[in-house]
Image (cartoon, rainbow, N blue to C red; front, side, top):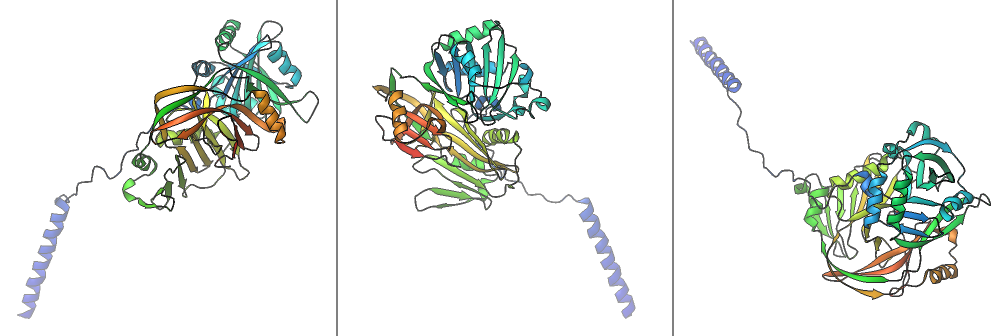
Length: 445
């Protein structure tokens, strides 16, 4: 009797098991709807830019053949035209040649030509669209700082690609016509007049380390006032974090907000209107020289975009393999600097083989023009005498130019013209009649 009961119970359990297995196999599982905003799309703060929209000359110098020179700077219409046309040029027949003061005198003092000066040494492999055979040229001239196109003594056109850092140059044949060069020179007549200051190389009597093109005494300078707006924290949080819902926030002693997801940290802007980003997940492996610039531009494009007229201002390669890239904001040809002697309108990145580890950027956008008034600047001769009094030799000067000193008020910013001295060490000094001299260093250096 008991055996029959056990057999019946076992048969029932087997039947139930088979029925449940069939139900699990045949029935579709119940699903839960995903939240539509689990991952917030990247916020658009500014515009996306191409590599050569921002890796563009900081100076376009016109040599007019009568001993006079003029220059156009980023943020001006003439510079914009040359920067775009430059991408259409091609060069052939690269041959290593000594680039001496005698050569420079021939085209700059007595001849006519056009000279493009970049903010840093550009890897020639990035300039492949210009007809560069990188396999042949890179071993001879891996980087270029200046590109010169000029009319030679036979009426034709020649070009020089010059690396100031390496003290080397190659000559080439450009595809420009003499008519095109004459048109550019005619257009450049209306630009700011500059004085040439060749700096001798310590390696030889005829050696040339570099040439400074310093604005001649500006006859009229103006102090401008603009309204501005600050980009809200939320826009940066959405653009810099993969999932903004997972972040934690806090406030530091100086009042600045800090956001983190445990891997990335964003310190929001304080009185300097600069945001600092740090990504500890980036592997600190050496970055290849040609890749750093492209990676920096792509990073800004993916994480908010560009909010003004920017140009590459400095590019340095560290011994540990990192690259430091700094893009500077310009308005009407003048870079924007702060009272502490640093670029206030800037994109500054520390790039490794694994990506961008450190990122500093401006959080301000200039808006409506309010007004202007006339002001004065010291003469360039007085500036040079002041530098001599400070025991700053000419060979230590990287660039001497005009800039706008930004003083932010509650709803507007005053832009006052000043002299900006950049030293080869990275130090920046401001000289002007309405602002006491300030010194500062670049943020990542």
